[in-house]
Length: 200
Image (cartoon, rainbow, N blue to C red; front, side, top):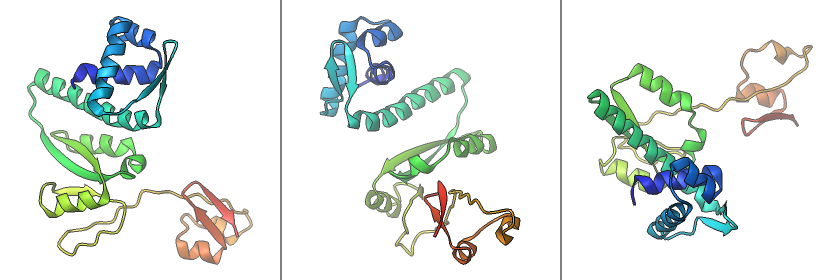
């Protein structure tokens, strides 16, 4: 498995066409098909259904794509480091599966602005494996979604979810800049999933 396999798979997920992938990567259609088949064999998973030159991704292909994009960005980063001769420290964060769905890109951007000599690498794994690796000292830091059941770790709770509520201008709650859980209960407002607020 090499960079060409990752590039070919990512391009195929973008174009959903063997022919267009071949044009984009300056390869023959046969070479694209062969590279994708090799990639599937390496993974031991079928990632596409084929239909007259069209590629129909399996559900698992989208999961693989997230990891492939991270790998390709690391390749790009390594290329930039070798060009500039810059030596950056690498900070490894272990994360559970839900974190990458919640973590916004501005977190990475702001971190890079504040600490330009440090590169963040996020390693996605299960809750159980994350705790095992942190407790074993394999990884120094982690961002976990659930409660951490270990007294030997330093913990800090992070909250990034924002809620919105809509109330009448005549309501006393309309004057508030911030509504916490206690106020929401008093006002009989349910805060649902960070997307909507429904009256009870």
